[in-house]
Image (cartoon, rainbow, N blue to C red; front, side, top):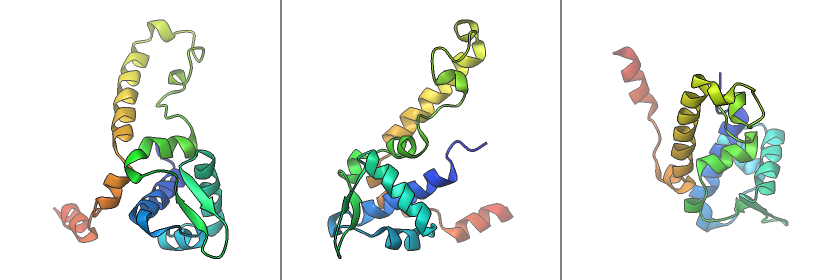
Length: 148
């Protein structure tokens, strides 16, 4: 089970890319797609969704493209996830009050709701600025850990 889908992962990578060049203007969907190894058509669709959510702005013209709609420190990972795949929910019963008739007496729902709140709070507390400043995981360090 994937909580964060592939398209959402692509969108997060594009948004981090835009956060890294926040002061330098805009980037075209083609450039973003190439830099992040995303199919161009999919990158265009993701940028449209991010624009609809007001997380990015688009500029027309030869030097046009996309740029963040606000400062990277004001955009959380949770906002990007919600823009691409909708509200985060571990279980269907957490999406609405009417999803299950057993909601009031279900002990499983109580624990799942706690976990969901924790995940939402953590993802809501991570900003694009934080990710843009991060160096990421080095591949050779991953290999060392696997060989242990």
